Image (cartoon, rainbow, N blue to C red; front, side, top):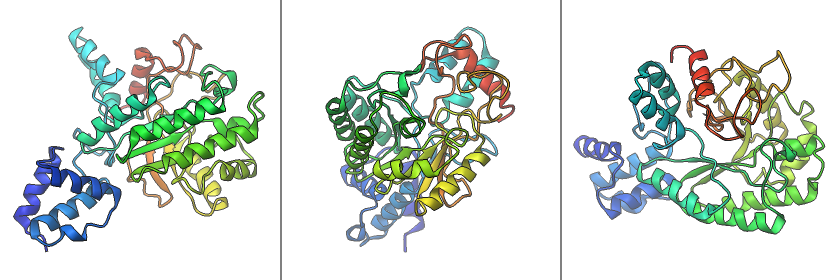
Length: 364
């Protein structure tokens, strides 16, 4: 049994997200990775460290910031302290816009995915995962560089060719190393393919996705979710099954739904359950970042900066659904979908849209 005093002191140490020495740092890492810790269980203090490290792996570490009253526990995910929402809070407070800054804090204080730029990917990912690990947290990262990305749409781009992509995703995986990370693999890539995207060779794309899953799963603490579109897109799920399997979903931790989209959590869960059943019980995650008011139904391009949308369920591992591993904010609320409805280029911070999302969500 663990001594109560030792457990309390150990919990305090981990609550501060600082490792007092190299041994404890190693224990934290082993706990996150799920490695056997029997050799550390010979004393009460070591027993406590082992138990607490295991708890960290399940997301029971102290949150980076205190959750609001009644808000779901966010779990193990990292809040990037220098994101655009955090900078906006500082700017607006300095300009006397305290009420607006408080609304934007509903975004800045919650975990969101990082979408590292293709350039210098290994260094960028190493920096992000390192910062998160030092905080005792797990980052959510998005690998988004498949050739012919976004089917030539507003987020078009991607690697020049297959060889470039393979080298890029290998560097991405090296950047993670053995540190904890959750990776969403290539949003929309499979859904675009089965929807008939011209110019995206299916065999090559599926081979590249399988390579991405394989490389990322070499990391002992990397959780990988292969994107599967959303409930309002590919209605005939049978068309997704073959491509998902060829792309390596069986080796991944599961699939992701609703990335950058607005489908409700309920419809995403129902869609995910049907897809999971067809895939042998694979788990999934849902992007709830902007789905608080569901999809926009009153105009063209409902996917591109639609008005009247709201923040959705805050990120959490407490989903109440055995198949849903987490609700995540994969799309960073306030970043534009593209140059439509007065928005800036895709991925650029748009403070007015962020403010609208927070206001529409009502009281947190």
